[in-house]
Image (cartoon, rainbow, N blue to C red; front, side, top):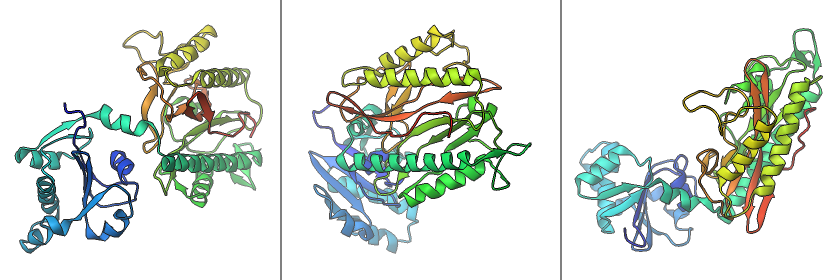
Length: 381
């Protein structure tokens, strides 16, 4: 492999994080980005050219210069035009051998390979590019985190006003449901320049079921897990945070889970620094939980399904994807680097009863970590 490989990415910046990292604009239609011999090229619709030309370091070529009008006159279908434009664009810069993201579109791969262009998917290459966040990405993550905290505060305010009505919790005479809380959180995200298609407001036994989104009327004295991952609309970067609440009297078991999760969170964040492997931090959390009698992935029997105790990883990278490298889990053989943004999210669960999870968002710094999350951990809303 050459020292500086050529690169090819095709897609739109709304759904392809590898492309949004290189071209930090919201572009909904597919276009082609390439790196050839150190040069950076974008072939796209002329509608996008004014914005693209404001970016530094890009040579921008409108599709008209590589045959779009010719293909239109031929009556070629739009999808076929895009394939032929990709071939012409690669020929224009003499691109013949490139690394591509692992989810490179198959139709484009087939067409380009039929022309003798070699394409090699390389997950690690593109993920490594996005590990260290750019200043603009980090600004977006901070904005998204503020929106997450505002949404969590709004949920807490609503829970704090709730009272038992015999059939469950109510606010102002209306049943308090997961759906109601989600609607309030969603409106807060929009007011803070963010959006989120999905997030979790689960309660009771639902809180022990992985990514169960939550539904129905909330009951007093049961756990309520709220897990939020809004996306900043300007940068397309995410944040991620979780808190667990109880309206009423938490059980002794839930209080113990909360205490251990808080201890695990604090101990894990204290270990974060460049050069530490994610699996090492994960192992420390597992050892803490196992000391108190809870099963974890660290020592479970291979091939068995773990549905209680600590059954998930400790965290993951966050950026243009809500789940990206590095991983803080059993497969987290990644050394942290300054500029990583990661979650730390210990949890304890029991099927049929519920669970507790706390999650903060952390920036790895040159000499340690900065916790980007500023929000209480109390069970009481």
